[in-house]
Image (cartoon, rainbow, N blue to C red; front, side, top):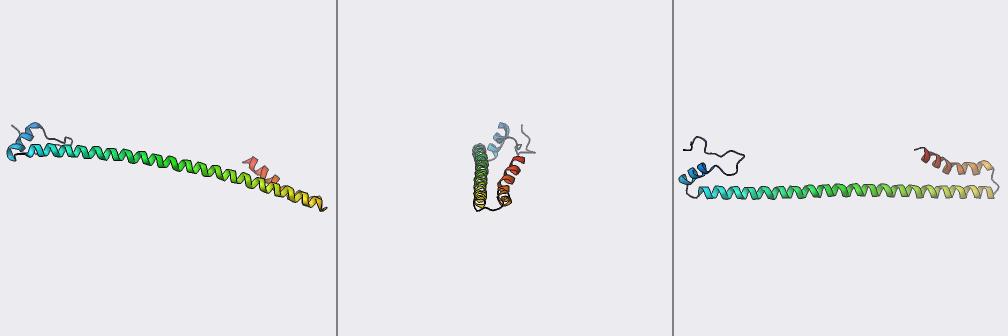
Length: 127
């Protein structure tokens, strides 16, 4: 016969052993069915929580991937902007040097104006 010293089932089992269910049923008719139903509801709830947790993890991974993709896209756009700005500065410097030469400015002026894009090119090649 089952000892009544510890009628509480172990934590790792959702349903008590059959002998204990029989004991509960004798003490309170319908208790065994209620205990089993409670265990089924608990199991259903745990599965639901696990499903929601998996969905949240998937959503979190997707959000992280989207953020990384946006960062890469922004980095690419910034690179393109830098290249366009460099081309614009170079064209303006060449134009300025040509205008200085056209107005018979000393050659040092044209050289100084052309030094800006040349220095930019040299610095970009070094890094």
